[in-house]
Image (cartoon, rainbow, N blue to C red):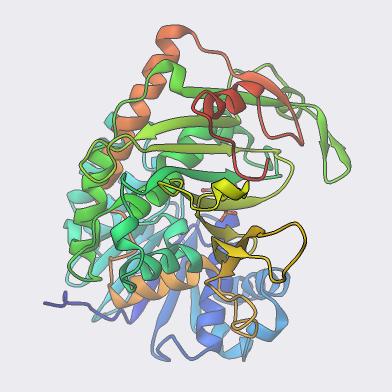
Length: 482
Ligand code: BG6
C-alpha cells in the first residue's frame, strides 16, 4: 500500500543566510519553481539571525541565485522571489518565534528545513513547539552532522522526537538526491539480469571511492573536529554501500526501502585495526597548482585524518566473503565518486589453449563528475588477423550519457526539497540507519584511540598513503584507475 503523503503549503527555512542555503537550497527552490514543480501557493518563510527585511532578503537571495544558479535555470526569478519572506530569529531566544508563527500563519502542511548548526536543533525545536509550529502536518528536515558519535546522535534524535514523530522527520543525506545514486536502484531493481549474479557467487569485491580535489575549504573548525571518517564515510559512503548490498525491497516506498538498508548496516562486521588506513595530506600539487599541507592550511598541528580507506564486510548470506573496499580523501588527483562491482573470473576459459586471456566483467557506476554506468564485457576484436583470435574488454554504456545529453542536470537538493514538500521519506535516512552507521564508525574510532593511530602523510595530488594501496593489494586487488 502506498504511504500517505502530504503536500506542504509553507516551507520554513532556518539558516537561510548560510552557505548551504546560498549555494544549494535557494538555487534548488528557484529551479523547481522555474520548472513549475512548486505549487504557486507555496510560501517560503526564510529565517536566520541577521536583522534583515523581506525586501533585503529577496535582494540577498537574488544575488545568491545569480551566483550559483545557471541563467537558463532561473525562470521568472521575480515571481520566485515574491514567494519568499524573511523573519529574523535568534534561535536560542524563545520570543523570536512568535513573529515567525505569525508570518507562517495557518497552514495545511508545513515543511521545516533546519540548515543550522546541530547545537541549535534543540532550542529551535523547543521554540517551534512553543508557538505551535510542530502541530498537524508539520515535518522537519535535518542536515548533517547528526552528532559526533552514537551517544550524541541519540541525544539529537531524542530531542527531535519530543516534537516530531519519526514519520515526520526527514534526515538529509544529499547523496541520496543524486541522479546516479537513484539510477543504481533502477539498475538493480528494474532489471532481471543483474539480480542472479549480485551475490558472493559472482561478485569478487566492491569498491566505493569518493575522491575530492578540495582541501579544508572554509570549514576549518568543523572539519578539524570531524575528520574524513565522520564527514563522509559515516553517512554518504555507508549509504552507498547499503544501496549496493540491500535485498530487493517490496516497493519503492520509504518503509520498504529503509527496512532493507538498515539490515545491511546492521550486518556490517566491526572492522579490524589492520583493515583501516588513515592519512593526512601534506603540501603537493593538484591540477598543476601547488597547495599547502593540511596543518599549514589549518594554522596548527593536527591529527585529524583527511583520508580513510577501509575494508568492510557485510555478514549475511548474500555477501559472505565479499570485501567492500571504501576510500575517501581530500586533495586527491581528481574529483570522482564511483562504485565498482568486480565480478569473478569465468570458471573455465575455452580460449586459454590459444593463449587468449579474458578479463572478468566489471560494472562501474560513476556518480560524479560524469553520471555514467558502464558494464565491461569481453568481445572479439573483428577480423581474421594472422595473430589468431583476439578478445578485448568492451565497456557498454548503460546510462547512455549521450542519449540524455539535453536532460537538465539537477542539484541533488532539488529532489530532496521536492520530496520534503510532498512528504515522501524514501530518500531520507531513518533513525535506526543513522544509529547503525554510528555504531560501525564508533568502533573504528575506538580502535584508533586504543592504538594511538596517527594518520599517515600523503602528498596532495596523490591517491593517499601507500598503506592504502597495500590494503587492497594484500588481497590481490587494485584500486580502480589509480
Ligand atoms: C559533505 C561534506 O557532506 O559532502 C564535505 O561535509 C564534502 O566535506 C561534500 O566536500 C561532498 O559533496 P559532493 O556532493 O560535492 O560530493
